[in-house]
Length: 593
Image 1 (cartoon, helix red, strand yellow):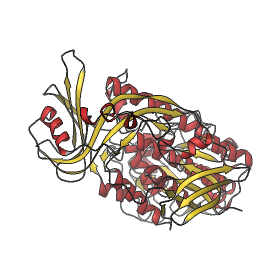
Image 2: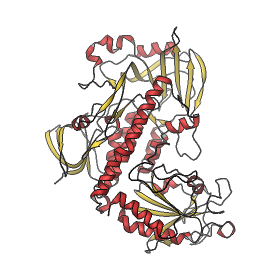
Image 3: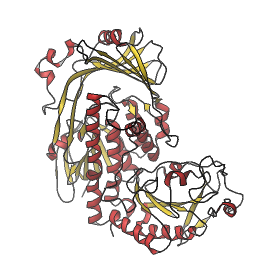
Image 4: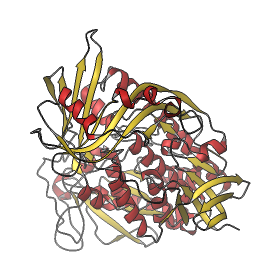
């Protein structure tokens, strides 16, 4: 007998995300953290566009947008001279830009979202040890009231670079450390730099190598920045002795060194050397020395215990990849655990359960490996080092190029003609005209706070019947685990109506809107339609042709969107039994039979 489904250890952004997604999908869990309160440190501050998309799917992006500030680009100075401006401009179809937010605000936003589900952080509670067997995990916790034994089905370690869960599992964590040490500080400066732009200033020594650096990231507040710079000599580990140079008993030197806090005078000295214009630092909220290692686990879990975030991968903060990668670890794992725990009341088979949970490592380990390698390379050679063009570099930094085409739980459905295939990110699009609202919706509006979603594209009126057949079959196979709707081609039919085509964005009057099908060949939009079993089937007209433009369906096509926003499969065409058989095979691989 278990006390709860999942124990999540560590209540930073990654652990909070794991708990929030588990609770959103109906899984009971406990979230523990050894710290008595949230730390007031602006450690990880960059929020990637892909993370905003994840938060949108979770239903918490509005709160994040209210707390964040836009990050528009970076101003670069070398040896006191302006060297250019990097603008962080993404394609117009990407719904969110880059942003910055102190880590404690990120934690507050996710914690308040988690509270909607009646779950709170159990502060001052530490995992001492655990043991697992064929049916669950038994953990020993030290709480403010004494020791406790807890029985759960699964355990998720989001407990940082010195993870107890990782060490107890005996996972490899190979890598190395950078010799450089840095100072971090959260301060206000009185310069006239443009709002929303970071500042990077480098000075070269007599031998031509860069020997001094200052990086400033804007934060909410007037002229407030998170500054990072090389450590003052008197605060270095060498000056402090061997004890400061070591890790937490495991040889891992990574993260804040709280015993060596720089003063405002240390920060001001660097600004005097490197600031693009004379400025004074004031109102310092916190500061610390920071050390960097690069390591990656050999496995993202073993048995019924898993690791995510810094417990699985640590690396240089270049490009603000770490926290964002960890958040996506958590989302990837959470929906799979929810299904493995018979989410929605549907029991899945042992084979599907094993494939699902094994796919967490299969999908996320290559991502961690790429991020560690890239951030180490960029730390040594600069962002953009390599053969990729600037647009590709930006998309990769935004984490919009992550995909799982080789995953054991995606497919069939190779990438379409300029459109996403199985395992690839499901892009957003606008102009989807519903029956009742006068304002068209975005695709992400329809995916928000849902699990598995089957999106069928009807390129012609006759395709609506095939869509209804496929949806009915999918609902029978997946039970209550799957939502579905139809996007019907607007004026001009599949792929012919671009976003600037002038196609009407709203539905016609009445229960059935023709959608200009008579003149352009698009599908008749049967608002109030049902699937083949008579269940309601929502239909949205692709009024501006954006869905066709982004997804490039080749005739009638089905896209199964996973809870983490990636395509589980892509099936086309929908006519005939082959489509139903392909979808049933995929659902069987994910859900079992």
